[in-house]
Image 1 (cartoon, rainbow, N blue to C red):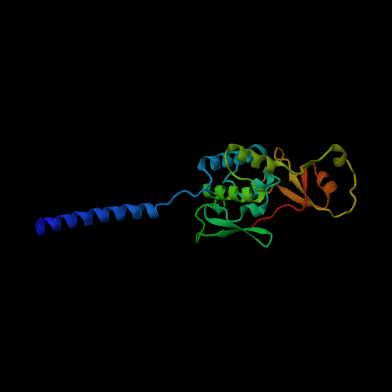
Image 2: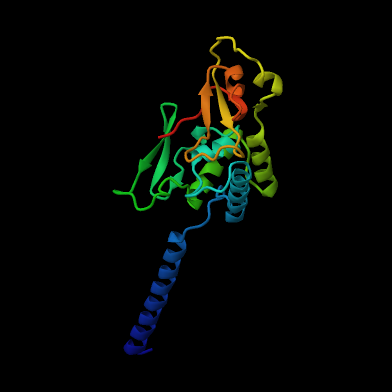
Length: 218
């Protein structure tokens, strides 16, 4: 075999080796789905069910869906579930027992700046699943989460409470939620804190109450 032929063979082998290494490199650095990643179709199902509940109970938001709306529609949902949830122009952070909106844009671009994004809904789902210790496997898992979030003590005002006349001065705060059919609130939550359940139901605009003060956000 001549020297030229040998050189050609070596060059061909070097080229082939380079191609193989290049393809291997692509495979190594190619992102593979995490086994813990929630399928997008399940995230969409979760988002749709959550938003439909808000529309049915509160009404269609003018700007977009924000944490207080979810809290009102799902009593077992907690503000801590919104930690690190992404919005159009920032992110929600839960610290010191309070949820705050941290802006990531220098100046407001839209009045819907605090609207939760699709990515934010995925983070919300992950947080809730982690708190409830529910593994997201299929649509049944989403249904289980929704049912769990709906379970809470909602006490609807009765006529006897409305006609109480006078209330005992005992401070046991409740959050009195207004009847959305009577009052259209500009801000959320559409509720006020009362000293006790008697005081809440004395207001004919209050439909039901939940224990504790009304949630607050910045």
